[in-house]
Length: 241
Image 1 (cartoon, rainbow, N blue to C red):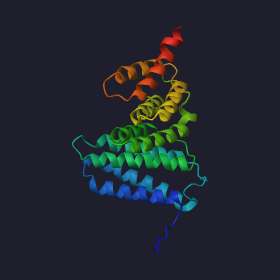
Image 2: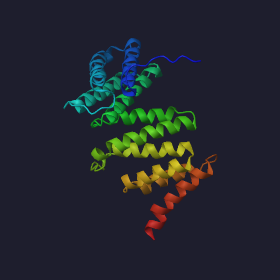
Image 3: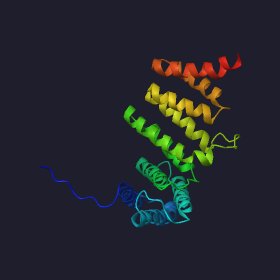
Image 4: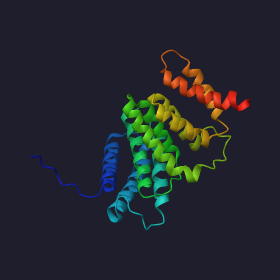
């Protein structure tokens, strides 16, 4: 007969407590002087998010007006902290910053709070995708990307800043497609390509042309080449006929 320990709070509240634990570990390990102010400010903002979970529940609607501002403040502090970490610092520090950015984004999703600052989340997802070493890990990142895209779609889908190739709406969709390609899963590729085609109609032909050039290299899975070739035909050859 196994003994199961009692767990206090709901899943969201436990996730927020883990977020604070992760922050405490990062703060204790980071010795960069430039990070001091960002660390202190970030700790206050994350503690506020955790306190809201304790008061109202980890997934409940929040009867407070400044929740989007608290999320934006936390993500802004994480962006500043990320910029302050030198390239020579241990990789674990930047991974911890990424984990916290995703934790804040998931907090916002749980409470249906608007994400106004998306860049740190997009960067964290990109680095997590690059670090994934197995199809299972890539699929997990793909799922996170899907969730973030669904949450920010209402605010970003208009995305009139077409001249900026680094705009979050473009980066999120391009990285979703690239992550799907890396999984070599036809279903995930079809889903990501459909989303990219809808979201970036002016860029889809160029994306598939570039992807096809890479897919022609030796060692690329046939299913990857087939899926990319089909989109390339659709938006270049067939579109012009």
